[in-house]
Image (cartoon, rainbow, N blue to C red; front, side, top):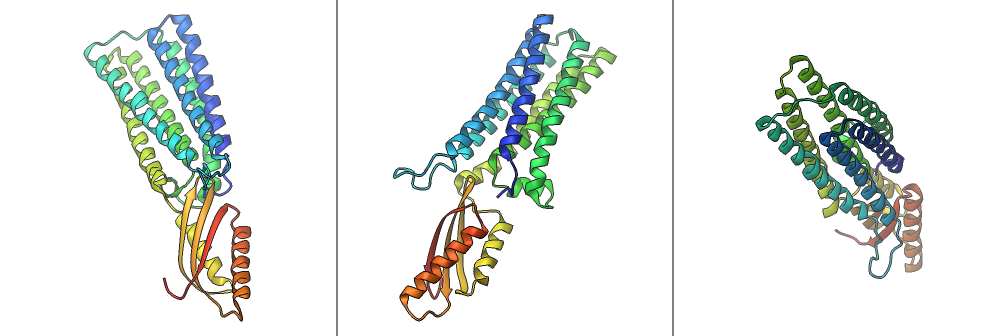
Length: 302
């Protein structure tokens, strides 16, 4: 699990940053009458919609279990996170690449360049604040691991998506700022077109990476490797247990399901054996509060 990271805080910071950028672009579009700037404002509004989908997923994850959904809705955020990755790939990445290619074949003069620089500069500041908040939550979760290893091992799809979105947005805004400045200085519109294509490529790469990781959660990943080792060591250390034969976990959004097969220490009778199993399960849930479901099978071999 992602430790004590607050995914909701990261989502709200990203939502606030994107909405502020949307308002800035919208004002710039009205002042200049630029259709391109209005398109950018709509793009930022779509980014706000992405955060809305993540919030919807988190809300659905809180639904209680039922006969139809006996393990609850904990995995709902995985679906919405995957959908956001697809939107980032199509609406963000592929559309930007298309726009860049269109600019190469039919270049348009750069209008109101200083206003564009002001909007992009504000965007960099807003996204930097969002990225700082996201990294604060990521650092709580990664526990000394590299960012790449955390990205590959985390089971928090919402935090994964926000990190990917913020990274792509910050890099994209920086590239756009450099491209506009280069176009202003040289008068060569090629820089603007190439910058747009580079931004699209960045979005596509990040979207594919995020989708690949979320796909594993959709299929059904267990807890993070280090977390599983902690659980295994904890159960093996219990006096009621002789040895753990197998331990299977399944990440269910914020919750975890655990199935244990173990050879128990000798017990005088069946009632004592059952009490010992209950004690182990109770202790395991106290030690690992994210365990919502546990299944314990005493056996002599796996």
